[in-house]
Image (cartoon, rainbow, N blue to C red):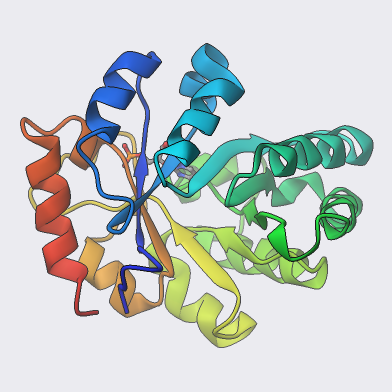
Length: 236
Ligand SMILES: O=c1ccn([C@@H]2O[C@H](COP(=O)(O)O)[C@@H](O)[C@H]2O)c(=O)[nH]1
């Protein structure tokens, strides 16, 4: 259920610099959405921008998808926790030792620690893309395998596509959070996403949070696009 205290929509601020990002953010309501800062905007504008978004009242998902050795990755998630972000992520394919080191490092932040989640299979990838990196299982099977590893390491959830959500909720339980990009309203361009679902279907399938970028940020009227999605999902 979408409530004012736990907005389900996470707007991906994939902008080339902070000015266009803030132009949109200053029209948004932190009661209706959270914000995601990814590699492009963080590389341009960094921690100062994240702090500015948080001062405006928004929860920030720092989507830097860390993938490195345990020592380096756990230090990076601790730096994210120092920034005060709501959620941070790593790649599950970094493995058990890396994810466990990250989870243990965040324990020292107590109840205020960010949610720690792991990327399973990018929503831009299909079975052929997986085969290209030597994985002959279906995306669904690979996502399940990496979600099980992630849960066993004590993380809070995974990034997956909404298509995998029913299986993951059955396998990992209701509390294991599913953060799903690849969200496309019926009229939106698919772009480079492969495993997609509409906002309504994604929430019905078991997504906890919907990551939505271009269908909002590239819309002729981004605020109207967000409002339309918000109205669609508000009762779910
Ligand atoms: O598997 C993944 C992991 C992360 N993302 C990120 O989500 C947004 C999606 O943006 P759209 O414009 O709605 O496609 C983007 O920032 C990605 O880096 C993902 O798409 N898939």
